[in-house]
Image: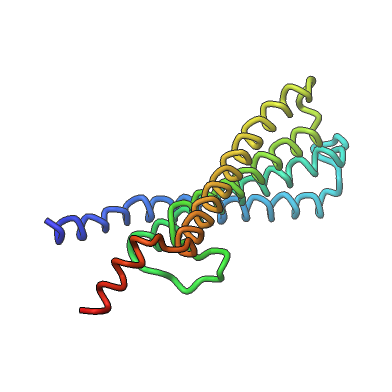
Length: 186
């Protein structure tokens, strides 16, 4: 049974492959589209089909590409993390080494917060929302919830470690000392 369960871990290669291909798609096609946009701006100046393009619209378009790359990064980090958790450790920089599902979640939450912030910034530059406060609150609430989640997890881990250290340092009771003394006399 243990051999069967050990072998099933390779099933995770299917989502890893899918996530890797999706990340590559976001990086390659997003990069090509961004280069195309910049080339068009360089050739045509800041005129777009006879109309002046505002600087805010250009910034919004570039920020949308940043958003695309960040989504690709989330997919890539997830693929790498799953590979490291289930298959084999990879020699990556320390910030990309994943030793537990908690580390993978924390990395994903961090990138997700940045994606949401970039989304809001893009909407702000484009001026596409008429009522920015509800839109911003709709983005801020998930960010706050994720922050509370990560904070509570870190607090819980800290409390657990302190309790473990305290139990190790706790003086032995008379009964425990007598029991240990009895073991050494044998």
